[in-house]
Image 1 (cartoon, rainbow, N blue to C red):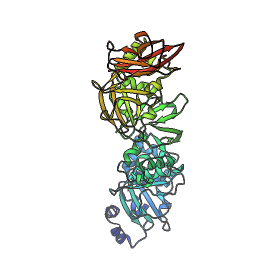
Image 2 (image 1 turned 120 degrees about the vertical axis):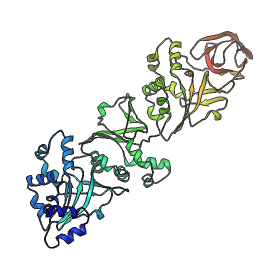
Image 3 (image 1 turned 135 degrees about the vertical axis):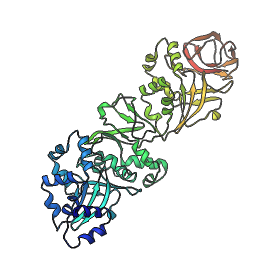
Image 4 (image 1 turned 180 degrees about the vertical axis):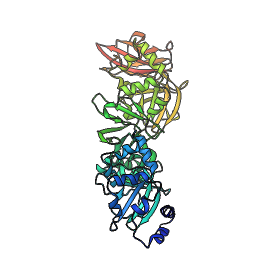
Length: 516
């Protein structure tokens, strides 16, 4: 009965404990652990491993993190064993010593992010003190503090601590100081030190954090004050262990932050990207997962790539993946205007070329075709002006604002779909320039006026030449002989973009002409 009374007092006030036992020398085993009805498994383990004497040493100064009985039962269940199975672990003595510090640390002295060395030399303990007042030792929460004896103090935990190498240890031991500071600040150490988790961590280097700070125009320390810090860090963690050998091109994987997916790119050259960030080192193995190193911080924003993914542009997405353009379009610090053809637009192109969608994806200039649909910067529909606009491919598209918005011969069917790194306009056709076998080896210059035109076009700079007017798929609509200042009558043609090919004295040149 006396022991039970002592335990009850110890739960409420260290001061009461000291006054109650001041008449006798006390120790953390006989006066805190052994009397506790909630530490029978810890007591049995300490007795079995012959560690009781160390905890009874009156000259010691100890801190014991004492897992309660439920903590041992939870660990046994997680490992698929029983309490006798836990007591039979070959490293049980090391596990127990991992719960003991050689100094007395009261709860008032605990600081967030402290890394302390227990009596076990196998690993350090990581301390988390949250803004809400909760304290964790690795993954285990401290449920009762400051159970004091003459030779030390006991803090009760709801989890058993295991001295394994976790993904957090990988970051700590390998110089990822900014990442570690961010994890500590965001109070995520408990999640990453859980020995029974299976995690994949994409770990940005210190330089990666410096780069994003430079992009934002703030010091690195300011990043740690972002209210989104925890969400950003969880966007770098998967809840499963994924080695590099399991990564596939175009895979969309869900991190612990469910706000967005991560987009994986595996290039033909063997390079791997997560969103826009390149993986620079792979498969750093921990006991609770694996770490892959990134050269950039990834952000869970809605990019132009996400707009295509989330809105059913499956053929466009497959093409972007095939052309290895996902890293560029998922860059959070670039701004793009994307003219996005629908699935039907790609099907129509395949039919026009007498092939199928696989044939489209196999085009050797697929990346150029796609980049011909992307303009640098964010250009809303209200900011479009008639005439040429440069694309990332290097050639111009022609914007027409007569009778709606047209890009070359494609209609904009939905405008201004916003993204955090640009805007998307939906097209009903795939727009083309000089691809698919139509060569533009211009050997002389000629003029077309006006261009765009609503009917009649004058040709300048030719003599005794042949002109062919075709659409972008190569279908011919006009074929006639012309001289300087000759006119072409386009009134019989549908509105759209055409190629005007002129052959003169064995030479050939091509220009784009818009009919509206």
